[in-house]
Image 1: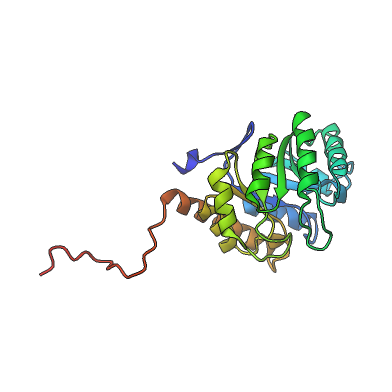
Image 2: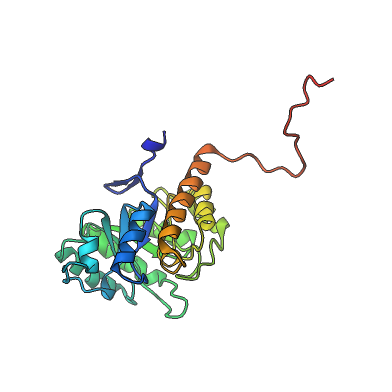
Length: 258
């Protein structure tokens, strides 16, 4: 049953499999409208790019701490394991770090993650009791090591952050899914609802996106479209696609035809 199709990450449970970000929108009002249209239950916030102490009416922190969503604080902008660890410890002190997105960047141009620093930070954060969701390269070995370190999910990229290029390597994602014992959430590079649907059809457990919605001509409408794309892809995966065939197969049965 669709109502029983729950995404479980550590001790957390969600019905929506679309995770959304809060950056790049025109203003807080537009952010709020897009988040609502997405149907997302998890909202990620870049801790180093907002004023965490500003809870005034109309502020970003007032919006995301309203209780409407589970906050997924992230470490965007961190380039070392130490920076990421300190940032998430601060979030914990502020009461917004039950479940976290670990992001340690290794290159400022591509924004590809630093695998070694990500793994180092993950080991520390897991030991400190964080529920860790690491952003990583779509590398099956890296994903396995992060899972072995105790991460509650792995978040391989589809393409570089903010590129909108879609799923560049579905074959790596299939290998990751084949081996992973924790949820696999595609993070970064999705551009359209069809990209999100492809990720879900492959068997990914969720999709995280920001730019694809925030920089659309109509972010609220795009948020709705992404919600439907994720839902359609998930349903298609559960339904099971027909086998691919080299040759045609008649739609109407020929048995009994005179």
